[in-house]
Each structure stands twice: as C-alpha cells, then as structure tokens.
Length: 179
Image (cartoon, rainbow, N blue to C red; front, side, top):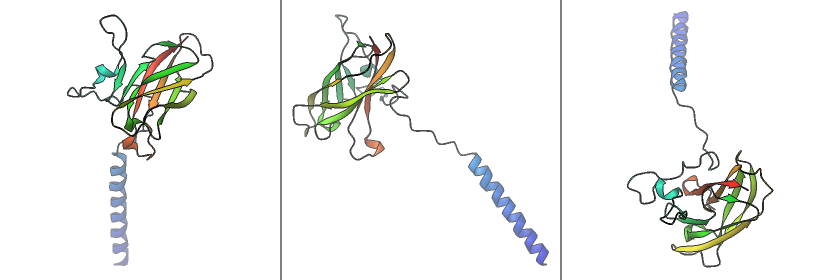
C-alpha cells in the first residue's frame, strides 16, 4: 500500500511538472523596452483620427520648398534643426513646447551618432515660465566632436519626467546628417 501511494504521488508530481513546463514554454519572451535611439518612429501616434499623426511628425515641405517645423503629439514643435538637415558643431536647437514637457524650466536633449553612441548631451531651457499648458519657446546649444562627413545621427528631445514612471516618458527624435 505504501508503494502504491508513493507511486501515485510521483505520477502526480511528474504530471504537474510537465504542465508547468509546457505553460512556461508557451509564454512569449519578454521584449526589451526600446529606447528612442533604437526606434525613431515608434513613439509617434499613427492613428488616423489623431491630428498629430505620422505625417505631422515627419518633415514636409511647404509650397515654397522649405521644410515645415516638426510637431510631436501637440506637445513640442522643433523649428531648428529640421529632419535630415546637415549640421555641424555648435548646434543650435530651437522650438516651442507646452509647459508639461519641461520640469523646472528645462528638459534633456541628446545627440547621437548613427550607432546610437551619445556624442553630446545638454538641456533645453526657456526664458518664460514653464508652469503653463501653453507653448513656450526653448533653445539649446550643443557642442560635439567632428563626425564623419555625411554620416547620420539623431537629435532626441526628451520630455522631462521627474516621476520616472514609464507612462510619462515621451520624446521627439529627428535624424540629422553631419557636415
């Protein structure tokens, strides 16, 4: 009788282990949360009913042949540099952003090379009060080492997120070419 009970318990344990193994092997692997450097357009809302769809985030040319400022989710507008501009150091960055993009009057900016390596970092600031939901101007200047002529990189303007909560993260990212 003792052998029978032990056999039943072993069979139950093996069966339970099998079901646990099968259940775990069917779970999709967790994906790494990509950074803005790894995907340039993934943070852009492309739903058709959104006024700030993908078409508004990418550069477009107006009737005179000049590029229009880049607007991201009706929160930030970049006026200089524009996507695919050819830039050199020092790089002057200008635009306007709603107050919630800032924290204590600034937000972080990053410049990378094509490999995603950071070549310059700094903060964009505004001379106006950031305690508003309206657009206020910002500017920044980044000095960076000389890059290979014609190589690509990215300018990333991150929403300042002092809470650290991922749901409050946002960024505008534009591709640039180096002189």
